[in-house]
Length: 103
Image (cartoon, rainbow, N blue to C red; front, side, top):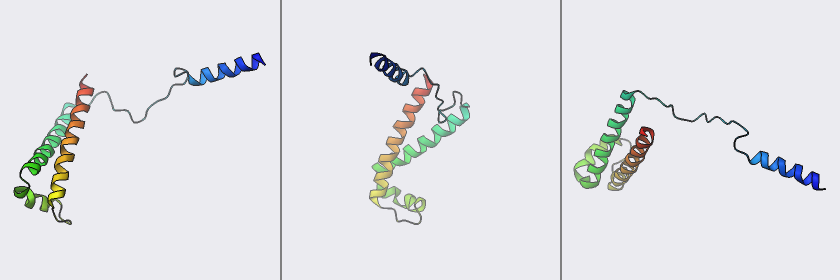
């Protein structure tokens, strides 16, 4: 009885050990990215942030611009405000990703 319990306990301990099995993450980011890829991505995010904040501050002036961008759907103040909020959240996420990669 005692031997079977210790064998069972050893089996559980080996299954809970994180060092026993090597697992590869196929979704990992590469360690190196070229500077131009990062530059283009940052410029794109900055432009998105500029139009997002401008849409929050001056929705009347940007409503025709968003009307062209959102062609099949009419541009509403709610859509412009949502784009501004999502642009700010996206900028914060991208900034966090760049700060983590830089370390």
